[in-house]
Image 1: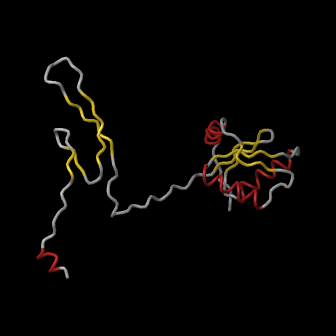
Image 2: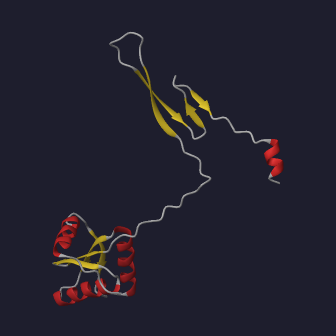
Length: 158
């Protein structure tokens, strides 16, 4: 998989975003093992922008690791500063499954009851309305009526 190429302006934005991040993965003396690559891939999938700390003192080896990770994990190398490597890969948007049979959940509604005399604050009451209920104009909770099916229609569909 080829690595992602970014413009210098995009790289600058990602460097600024990565400034406050802590290293997610540490690469020890064993170097880039398959387990480390798998962990970095999982972190990129979850976060998109990550820092990796390399414990090796060899600068050339760290640069080679950054290029290897970028090539193999389809990521963009953002920065190599000291023993820190910064990688970025766009996060895949999760597909939200819509359940047609799902009923609406409970919601909290504020009901204001105004005083008959002017100049007083309205009385605020928080009411939890469930999915099968509705709120009337007077602030009362009514249970939704179940729609009855016609005997004729149910006999025709069979």
